[in-house]
Length: 488
Image (cartoon, rainbow, N blue to C red; front, side, top):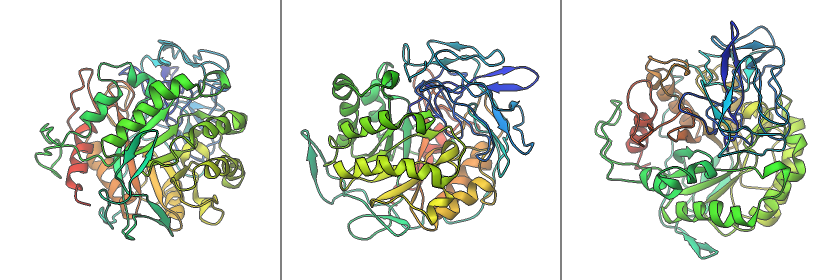
């Protein structure tokens, strides 16, 4: 998600979440934003939906989503989170609910972001979160701890990466093969099942302004000579990065306007071309955490411009809309998503299209019987610790139901240490990372970890771009997992 939205927590006896644009948010190291994957046109860290089936959560008008934390329906609340009925709504600028303050610019109504997006001070914190029907759902905050193994082999099938067809557009070529959807599998041209494993970076504009820039970060996460010590027993030594796919959160057009030629030529296309040169599959993620029904025209205009530019890139996927902040049913959401998919498919006949779902990408079960049409469609889920429940709660059952019929990709999941992060001080790799990845890969699902950043939370690097290691950090864990599955 393009994290131009920040979620913050302030203490009012409970913690209130202010959304900074989903887990793909640009935030200060202490902040987290993401609403079960919710993002806005802001910048921030991780976003929480605390359980997708809550009633509430709020979205800012066209930009910063500030949900006063968990919107609770059914009494479930996140531990350490806010039990707010309805949440706070930010419309037209900085939102501060219960003392959460934003620093460094805030997303305004219409998606405008100042100085690299909203920065979160203090971050959000939730421990565990509630999930399930009537579960607590808040836009903002970090996903909590929890989850144990639900079984499932981590390596069903395998991945194909090299060889295949060559495509070129605008002078850029990819040697990666076109992938296609066959039943509930993603397959290469030989019919081999593909599971793609990788990372998401922070919002493209924010990353371009860091000391590494976009290209420097892509070099880092594809460096097969990185001998950073392992932090988990699964891959002792972890001598290099074996990233197969990268998610590139595209900044939503400012003020509900259209994507500019300058942005395409100086930010988006160079990022995609460098990912292509680096041998990566690349997801162009339109990083909204917002109400999709108020942005129909803007989103359609974005894809009308962008889809044909990369239509000959065999390695490029289109993620239509990062996260919907509206908690409605699949059938209502699907009708709106179908219109955007029709636009993209008419301009890009072969590219994989990633469809989101209501409630911060957590309510896609209805797609099993009422799918998006157009061919080569896969479905995304955002699954933080408080949403993962051993494969048997409302969130995971939605994923399992969809995965039985269609390919899935988890475009956001993650954890990190820090006072604002749930589960701080515990081995989240053991309680959430390992069992959750085993479960989603057992369903044939691909994934990108959130977030290969040194500021958007949960982060994988420190301020000097050193990989974060330890039982409460996902940096070393993700690198080790990629290495241990590098031949699949």
